[in-house]
Image (cartoon, rainbow, N blue to C red; front, side, top):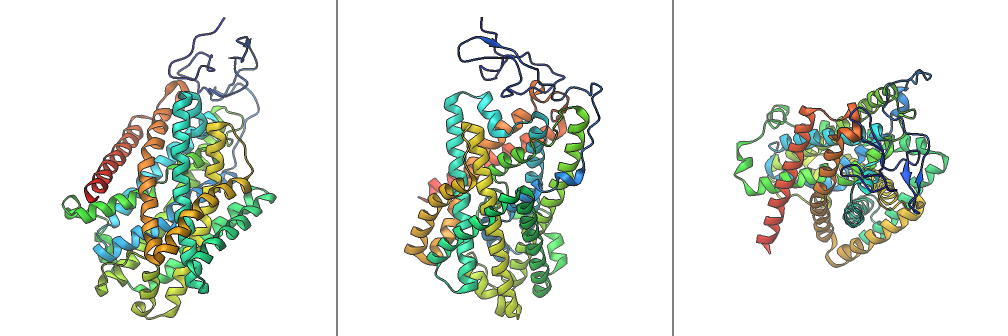
Length: 468
């Protein structure tokens, strides 16, 4: 006889829902109904139960370091460069407050994603598959894949521009060379996850060092930068400022980063008791805060450099990465400024393509239960991304590459609510999260973030329709 389904859960969820105990719809150790309709009973999942006298599991915080770095590179990809440079050149320091707000929103949502992953032992894609109908699951998977490919297009274009600036190759050759760099980075994983995390973290610190040098060369007005942390009064009146603010948000908070983060940390609380979850969350929180703080520093530095170098000299329409590269050296007065700029761009592009591959793998496995080798996943995503990139740079050159960067951020922004809304619902579900569910104040802030994202998307769509 078929057991009753708990509210909102997939038909295979046949266990009773307890407010004091996180449950997992996809855990094969729980009682379930097999495909023949017979009940199968196995050892229940005690994830989230209070400690029952088993040996205490103390998480070593340093062992959780690495996931935050992989997530942070999505906050420093070439799409962020395009929006930050354009904002700083046109409005000076005024939109620095938007960079700060977008980074804080990203930090909150990444914290929610990591908490859901640690507590449930499942990532966001797996939870969506368990909670929603097959049709909805397929829809969410397709939209997420489109966002990942759009993001990969931005990374390909950014890396290609950097290679052109550093080596003098054509953009088309740079597009193809970027694929080689991605596979070389992924080859590090044959020795485990840690070597790749170390390389990516090293590149992040390299990018940070590059912008310390750029800031020293640009000699910005720190008083103006500090004033820029307050929202400008014109933000609600200036259509161009609203457009760039939406672009900054779309480029900062990546939908696939939420899937990736929950996937990277889902095995951190291995024993599943309260103490191991608490230890895991402490380590994950430190890692996430440190990594995303560095990402904010890089994005803020991009805008500050653009404001100090381009806006201050009357160059208000700098949006192409290649234009920024050409102008920065003569305006700053050092040839090294342009070299450092291109090297940092290449590091960001390579980093982001690797994490995009990891996110794609997590999404495919979570939504479809389809495992695929990372090299095969990278080949699939990169093949689909290279086509549009080659067409754009071949037909329109550098201008086409910038338009493609902007278009990719629009796609990411439109997909973001489809990841954020399910995430916040899961995080507030007492039956799923038990005592670890997100409490009222952070939950209200998370829903506010979701609302802001939806409103900006509506404004974005309206702008696109009225401009046609």
